[in-house]
Amino acid sequence: MTPLAKLISASSILLGTTITITSSHWMAAWIGLEINTLSIIPLISKSHHPRAIEATTKYFLVQAAASALLLFSGTTNAWYTGQWDITQLSYPPSCLLLTTAIAIKLGLVPFHFWFPEVLQGTSFITALLLSTVMKLPPITILLITSHSLNSTLLTSMSIMSIALGGWMGLNQTQTRKIMAFSSISHIGWMTIIIIYNPKLTMLTFYIYTLMTVSIFLTMDTTNTMNLPTLMTSWTKTPMLSTTLMLTLLSLAGLPPLTGFLPKWLIIQELIKQELTTTSMAISLLSLLSLFFYLRLAYCSTITLPPNPSNKMKQWATKSPTNILIPTFASLSISLLPLSPMMLTNT
Image (cartoon, rainbow, N blue to C red; front, side, top):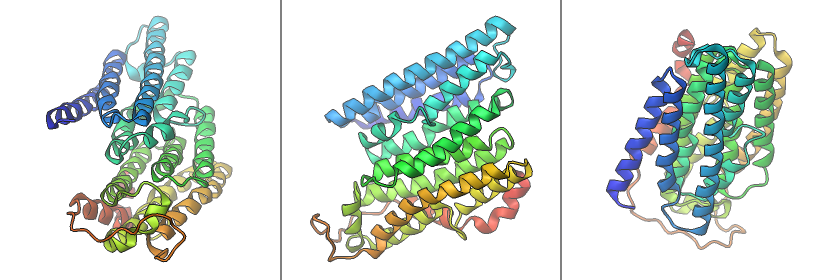
């Protein structure tokens, strides 16, 4: 893929995201989402591998269906209320259609099946875009319309996402699939609180993005496709492996790392809303995710050769490390002391 084509795709993704998050009209939001979908497709299919072509086809069909549902939701609401404004969503069937469309785009359970397969069929950088940048427009629409949505339905889907994201990640050996189920679980944490505290949802998304960028860039640098390769990465890049371990523990939500902050605030907010049972359920379900994060951290630093891996030992190379890795890793590990300042803004 030529640099010009990459530049056009990246610019189109930025344009589509900007259009969607700044629009107040359903048609403008739909156009932005379509620009995003069409822009990421060349990046998914650039390797011309059958797996990449399959991932591209799945992504296109799923996103096209979700966009059609979203447009139908806006059109139906305009038909019955005369309002094309996104904030004026009041017709109940339109609210249900919108919830379904956004759930498909985000990969919420039970519309999650496409996400792990698409991430597995593409490169680390494209998988990073799918896990972070491409989630921003749907989350923004969900945030704008959160006052009109069914809280019981959103809570149920969120709890199922947290549960399934942890459960399905337990037996995975492919790092991109593990990160896909991690994303499903974190999207569940974001959507469960969006009705009660939208600012907290965005804070969770920003912190999740910081940690995910660091992990994907590290895995891309070390070319870590699966757990056996991860076991031998220490001999090649010990500092990167240490950074990866700390960032994974932060993503798991362990104190005193940055990832503990959003989970702590979400549980606190749910208890304030007298949803103690819900907060207890998601706290227990997060232990499932904690297990495979700990397994990844164990494989990245503690499992040293000799080990049962059949992979060839990777020798140390002088390939330059991406300057973004230490930047994002530092933020992913050490932001918890700034929590009082973040609390004043949420």
